[in-house]
Image 1 (cartoon, rainbow, N blue to C red):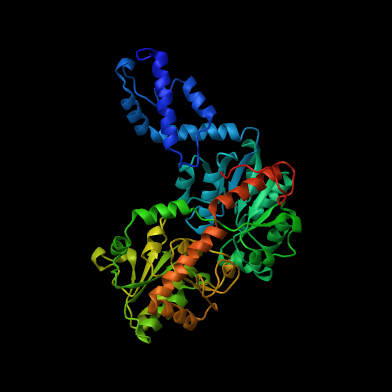
Image 2: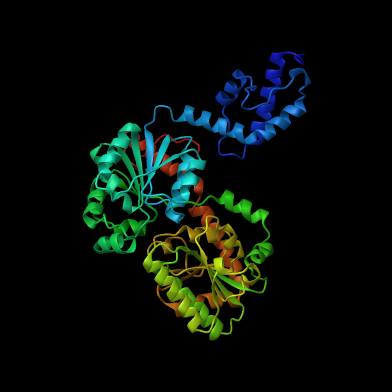
Length: 500
């Protein structure tokens, strides 16, 4: 009836948009009716979405094709509209990072912010210095600013910036942002502080100054921040107990870090394991031991090197190869540690290479390969036969959960919160920290019995689905922020709404 009228064109465009929106049901940003209504009012013919064309010539199929071509722009428009409608009236949120390097703690922030963007008004990310994750945050629409905590006027400048940005809520990530927590308290800003570390109370200065090279940070500052913070989130009960006595009981909350299973599952379903291993230089006959994490003393890569050497030289495991992912060359003690690993491997008569220095046709041939830090690690889980986490100091690394999500057996140190994530002999093995013989024994059992590894992998996947569901974690953080903004305690119940 309206074939050649402008009203008919708007109606058909609206219908096409509705159909396209329906097809996007898997998106976490489902388009509500106000968004479609605003599209209708704009007649969906705005120049930035659709090129000028003759209305009388545009067929329904052509319009659908245009919508498909402009899918990304439409999704972004929907996201902006949803966020604007949802977060109206809420205080602007600033997130504080301890760095912009790629690591588990920072990836947590990226995932958290990206999922909460349409329910909480995140405005800006502050970090001490530049790093590769600036681009990641900017890609989800967040501005990034760098302010050096070592600067004499740091707190003065930061306070001015918070006022200028009209920030009303602060999310501080890692114990190293205790400076921000204390400033936020003095400015009467609601604060949520996420602690990833497990630093013994009598070693706060050592870890701050020697391990993490934060010369401007000390135990006095850390303890002061614990005392005044209104909400402190720990990723495990064990870790929470480490800081017992420093915080108010009603301020402490345990939330297990969830993992985005959808992304992992898409990768698993769209990649062939044999091809992934081949791309890394490994064959179907190789038994690949994966150690994923920053190469440093507390992560225990030296024990992996020693155990792999024993398996190959003393126990007849001739097809074992080890891949360590996470080397960086910015701190002296880490570079010395990498050299120690290399010398350990060579002293046992085995081959050692740095991936980045190896010709493509030689990759995967060495017994031990060390690779620099990577932004995309999913392929390594798929390639692995077993994932090892023999850490000396750890909380609850996401590596364990991600490995179990890929149905890989894990061998981990029995320390801190790791036993909260798996049971010995169920999803993997727990071994004493610093014991390369115990680590070698556990890997050998899995090497000798592939069926056992498959069983552990299946049970690990089930554990992840029950304990580390991503939507549950996001909803908990969302509820806590709403509680704090409303003047309630972090642990108080609040009106439920669907997970973001």
